[in-house]
Length: 221
Image 1 (cartoon, rainbow, N blue to C red):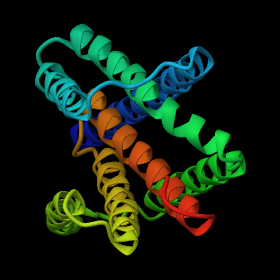
Image 2 (cartoon, rainbow, N blue to C red):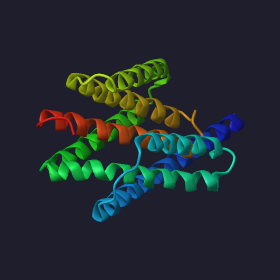
Image 3 (tube, rainbow, N blue to C red):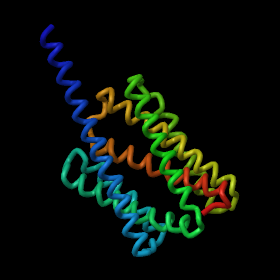
Image 4 (cartoon, rainbow, N blue to C red):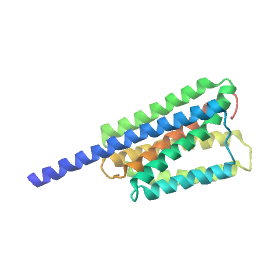
C-alpha cells in the first residue's frame, strides 16, 4: 500500500518536472525566434535559396531529435540554433506584410495562435483526455498537406493555398493536443523533443493564419 503510494507520488512529481522544463524551454525558444526576427528585420537581411533552407531546417530537426536522448547539451544548442534560424526565415515574411500595410494582421495572427495554444493546452490539462487516437489522422493529414504543397508548385490556384494553410492549422492544433496529452499523462519523458514538436506546431499555426488573413485582406503574400 505504502509502496504503491510512493510510486504514484514519484510519477506525478516527475511528470510535473517534465512539464515545467518543456514550457520553460518553449518560452525561451519562442523568445529566441522573436529576437532573431527583429534583428533580421532591422538589418533587412534576405533569405537564401528555398531548397537549401528546407535542407537546413529538416537537418536541424533531425539532429535535435537524434541527440535529444544522447547528448542533451548538444540537443539544446541545436534547438536554440533552429529557433533562431526560423526567426531569420520569418523576418522577410513579416517585412512584406508591414510594407503592404498589413501589420495589424501580424498582431491578429499572433493573438489567434496564442488563443489556440492556451485553449488546447488548457482543455488537455483540465480533462486529462488521451489524444493518442489522433496520431493516425495527424500522419494522414501531413501526407495530404505535403502532396498539396507539391501540387501548388505546378498550379496557381489561390483556393489551394488557402486549403493548405487551413489544413496546417488543423494538423498542428491536433498535434498540440496529442503532444500535450502525452506530457500530462506521463507518456512523453523527453522534454526537448516535446518542446520541438509544440514549437513547430505553433510556428506553423502562426504562418498559416497569417497566410489566410492576408489572402482575405487582399491576396496571398
